[in-house]
Image: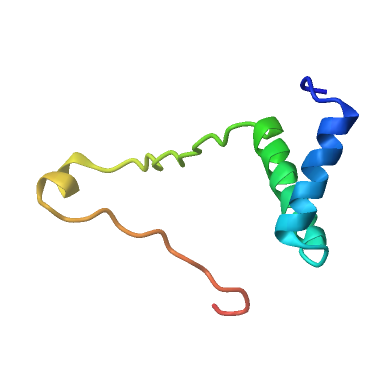
Amino acid sequence: MFGFGWMELLLVLIIVLIVFGAGKLPQLGEGLGKAIKGFKKTVHEPEPQEITEAQPTAPTSQASSAAGNPPSAPVRHEAGKT
């Protein structure tokens, strides 16, 4: 395991216990676990692709666009009204 034997790992654990104390070890473990989980999620997640909506190509007449008039808006019909 990365060239460390059980004695080296035990020594590191004892040093961590002395430096941080027994009360902080669960918080350190939780933070480390979340960091590893986030890293794995980022590595295995595909890169997001930008999805751009295509501009609707409504047929516009040459005369209305040449005169500076905007194209007419679509007519919306509401249910129940005549």
